[in-house]
Length: 211
Length: 211
Image (cartoon, rainbow over all chains, first blue to last red):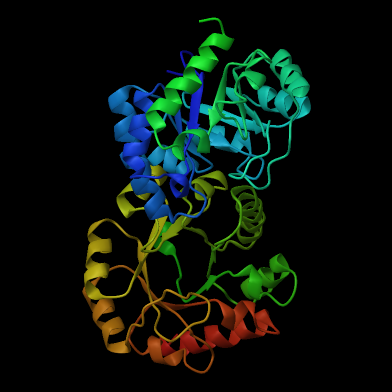
């Protein structure tokens, strides 16, 4: 799993933004071409987080889509997720690695080359770089220019996905930095059709990557 | 460690209530006789929770006092805590056990005999029963009468500590139910002298247990 991941269209969930039922929304997004699903829950209790993670684990497994948990290594272990994503206010990478073992994917948020190199050195499996555009879904996000995104991609030999305010209008811009994929929240989950939005976003990524 | 625990005076932390520096407050409480320390953090980021847990792990280890983490199995693993406490809105006990293994202490919140028997069956190592008195530190706590507390203690063969609004004035009341100890938050951490308050509370517990 770890070495074969396709990061083209990396969905980060936000239940509060879904127009319809959450699981149906994510399933439509997967059918539309989402290649990785990350469950992000900022206010849920552990019981609720676990319960939702268990549902998404079943769904993603049935479609063969990798499933990543945001922040909580215990939830990742509890549902046998494929990996964990850690941001700058989460547990240190080496600590997360010691809990999860070497087989799980660990992704790290980075907003500059120094962050990226440190994460690489500490054993990150991929980087989420952002926010590349202003965003309403993550209030503490710093802005990262496309030039810095390209420098990050050129500095590391692990996959790089851009995140932050990416939609169908602007997705080609971060992709022009030669990165591996885009990570989106509202452009899919808040869409009237998560399926169609995912298809269109994936098309843009594929065109940018000449595939 | 697991079988030798003394639950007489079980401190649950609340950083927001401390009058002075947090670690000094907990150290004073330990010097005053606190026999178990549980770190409870409801709003901290994972990075912050981990960092504070690491500090308290060092402190408790230096005094030989058992250290329990509230809710977060990953933080418990990360700092090699002695155990985890799970409430009704936390991860299920069997899931926590599978993450932590058999050697770690797992305590469970209970507010009736049915909760207690279920937790016992699922392998809980001790029970925190409450709230026995009205409390400002946990807004969703249900009230448990002293008769129910006694029924719970009589129903299980694992240690039972009472929690919720316990202070130097009323501590003898839950102790009269024949339980193993009291769990306090504000009566120690919000005290002008956590050391003196801990000493006086421990005296009450010892007198109740005839030791």
